[in-house]
Image (tube, rainbow, N blue to C red):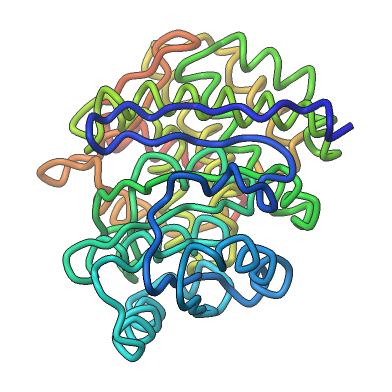
Length: 367
């Protein structure tokens, strides 16, 4: 079946920072995936304890002819390690090995690895080239694309980072074969979000194919990854640094980031928090008169079918509000939400605290 999946490329049009997303099966082992990338004396593969044993040697075998020395740093696995202390492990390796500004960094992993390796690439010697090799569904449809790199802080998720574009993104669908079911579901949340904000027909398609996606069907995954990347590419091409339009990609994330920080990073997966957050943001959209009431149960059903939670954990309301006021979209202490303005369209605006609190209460487990 894999042989029938044609390799496709989705361009990210950013002038001299433009690059392609390669989507297909067997890409890790294909010379064409790496053609045209710069050669250098040193290259560093950044991976983690879960992905490294599975794929680092295979990646190294493809890169051996392009670099005189292939180095590797293996980070601890999990969102709870996406912090300054773990980031230092990458700098330590680069400095100890005498890496120069032509060193190429390869991020081999999911969103956490990609964000940290990209941030390290942005900062080391004020910028070295890097390539995203996304090994999770969430990374393939969202975090590896668009150049947002960051680490977490105890007071806020992704609050310390940089916009820094990769040279290429490799989305090898075969790497999803080893992805745990929970991680696959987390990635589906980031696919689902593209429907309400940009493409109502995609939402219809996901409802028809969610079982195939959860089952790892390569044809379904290829379509979902490609369409997600096309939508994100169009948005990023218009607003690279999130000055306005790009913020719509954070549908569900204001509530979701509060869940992650409130529980402690790693308790819920990012996609799980986003799935629950989308239901809450949809309800807020309805209560503000922007979206049809049917959207809320529709998203609830789809998220449940995708294996995602739809009830938020019990957190003090003051904690909710404090965490959401620390969101990057907030301005002058005012929480701004990505809301659905009719299916397939999104906008960003504030909402009254009392209304937000009523949404939280309606979609949280009892304390």
